[in-house]
Image (cartoon, rainbow, N blue to C red; front, side, top):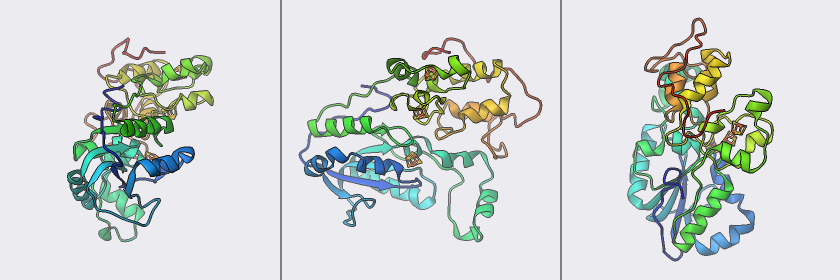
Length: 303
Ligand code: SF4
Ligand code: SF4
Ligand code: SF4
């Protein structure tokens, strides 16, 4: 299995107490659990699901053998809650781009938080939110992570199976490109020049976007050691403007390194003022030079 995308120790307990909780998120990853229609009865028989507000009105504050956590930490209250939940959980599994990388809401991390809050809410003084939306792992130890927006159902099935059997989950550690090739999909970068983050993005979705003729926008997040700077340099060399390339990396996992550095160096997130970018170039004439640390020949292979 991948030690990067999923590094859960095996859990060999009968009928483990399971909780599913959410923070700042859209609930889509929780719905993936409910999408396991063929296995739902089996899951209900094998796990003691004691907390899952999306699916049941019965509640429990723990303890949990396994706790699935969706969503980023975006308010002071959530920052306290996740610490308490961690205390209650033997095994904590983050599910989805919001929980593992901060999610799309982390684009605000480049912006003026107070200005955003005032623009959205008529009474921002009543809204207690943190200046940054951050992944759960920034706050507490995480035992395993399922990536994606939403998570991949195959990886979820594998994780649940491994929990039942008390073995390590087997998740491939590979880029989207590998899945793309295995499925015989036409490379959109080669065929149509469509920018694609597949070479630097963790696989797990079955190359969903390329199979529909779209470039990957990185929702499974960067692979460990991904040479995103090199890919960004390739996009720049192809004639794209710096902010345009920065926006390619400014998606659901923009706050995860090394995507975060690329977004910062090339102008920050869309609509953001370029604050807190650590060397941001927030505009001006297009500069075709590559982001810093550009190297050729990243581990994923470049297009
Ligand atoms: S990762 Fe995507 S699908 Fe999952 S909760 Fe966040 S926004 Fe929703
Ligand atoms: S660059 Fe994109 S389209 Fe091309 S092989 Fe990789 S994932 Fe597939
Ligand atoms: S191809 Fe990329 S953006 Fe599309 S689902 Fe897969 S990881 Fe997400």
